[in-house]
Amino acid sequence: MAGRRRAAAGDAAFFDRFRAAIARLPAGLIRTRPPAAPDDVAGAQAALGRPLPADYASFLRSFDGADLFHESVLIAGVGAGAPRALTALAQDRPGELVFAEALSGDRFAIDDAGRVLRYDPGADERALAGSGFEPWLDATVAREQILFGPDGEYATEVFDPSGTEIVPTIALRQAERALKIDPGAADTEHARGLALARLGRREAALAAFRAATDLDGENPWPWFDLGRTALALEQPAVALPAFRRAAGAAREPATTARLLAWAVRAAVAAGDGASVAAVRAEALACDPRLVDGLRRAAGNATDDADDEARAEALALLEAVAPGTQLPRRLTVIPH
Image (cartoon, rainbow, N blue to C red; front, side, top):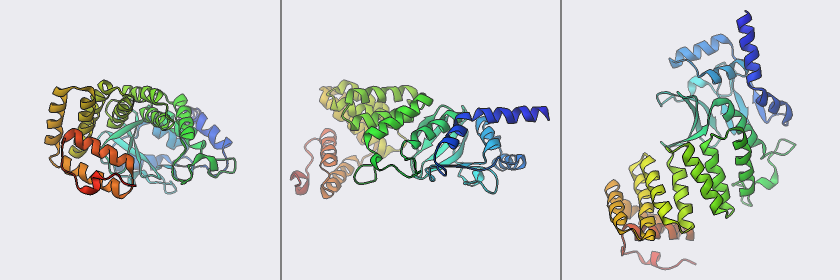
């Protein structure tokens, strides 16, 4: 009995920051369930055929799941009243436990090392979202609460005029606040770089993308954004290896080929003829339909009047297949 009391007291202390946020924030922004029953925890473990990660199991002994910020993130529980049933989540990656879902469709999993990984819907690549369950939880709360006013509703100044994208100054504040809690979250460092790039602070963005790749070299997208930013800063010798690392981390051949096309573009800019020939051949071998795909991308961007995307697709096409015959609509600058 004394051991159980000590365990319960430890769990209570373990989530002090989270409990303080619940008490401090407007009612309803964080909705938690009462502690999970031991039998429900045991039943979930039996159904999954594995023990639950220690930090997450401790959370369940305090809160049987949670709804964070109007379902922005739903943390699964194991009892009948949980906002998401843990056993209903697809567990399709050995050595990982999917424990939460986001309104955007992202899924969060804890790996064997206790880290939190984020998966975009329909993508095989994963991002390192947290160095552990508790720091991920606290950093998520710190990041999301910036978007809300004292009435518990979205603050009007956080979104751009379309109402669909967070303005970069707020996105930067979100990332910086979250990184103070969990500096090992490569995904957040990547988000910081994206916000800095949107603000035109390219040198700072480049440093953030480097930090993200140092924390997690297996995610292709920080490497890709490092390469794009270096290319914009006229540093093709930095961009070329970054694009190659991005391609090496990608899981789908078509994605790998497109990232290699960026590497060809960087090699052309660097005047590295040997790399141009080698990477161009590698890209076309990886996806023989690459040139047609770039033509389609340029055509779609023209139809959508997206001049930036059109210019990018045409630049990649010229790097991969110089002198390619283009339809007339792609040779005329859209108005």
